[in-house]
Image 1 (cartoon, rainbow, N blue to C red):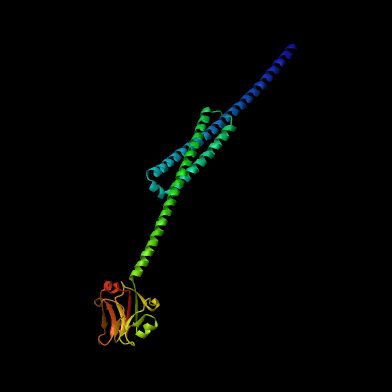
Image 2 (image 1 turned 120 degrees about the vertical axis):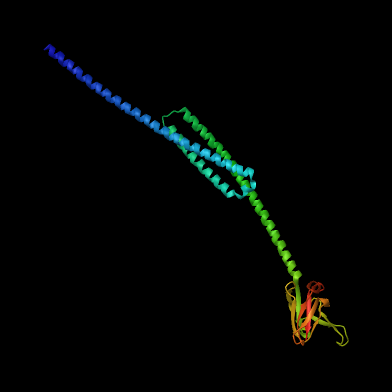
Length: 289
């Protein structure tokens, strides 16, 4: 009976020990899985950090390159820069987009790093360096923006000057055109004495009782009674009368009265020397029967 009790005790102890060992193994397995999960999570976060940092570094490199191109254009060829303002503005806009993207990623990294249990001194130092570079780029972009504003102002000033010069040129051209028109304009009146007298173009002066009186142009004659002509384009004046008399003063060797084929009628007055003919007077009055 004593032996039976001992055997039962031993068996009970063995059974209890086996149960404890199995529980310990299960606990260790769970802890191992937890550690693996934590390590995996940290590796995943670390991978995200590395990718984000790489993207930011690439953006900064692109930004630096674009800044260099803009500065080179502005410094080496200011005139070209003035004509390339739209392209420069587009480049600055692209730089701003890259900066916004980098800042967004940096904020995301900082937030994840703060909420994680990861303590990586090198990573934190790298992020600090990137933050400094982004801040420096902000300063440089502000400078580029100011340079672009200065270019815009210069172009605006040049445009104002060009507009002013063009306006002045147009005014001068208008004055010249007006003067040229006046210089080339003559006034012609052809008609009977009665017709032209009634229009206050001619009058008789001197003589006795109308005998021997000279026909002459009325001073300040009514211009509406005359036809305007361009002396550079007109060389003949139609008359179509049996006889004609030139009242105004013109050198006789600067024109001629041309008759028709029958010789019985004056067809027209032909100006043979325009410069000489119009030199003494820009008014031509011809009386016809």
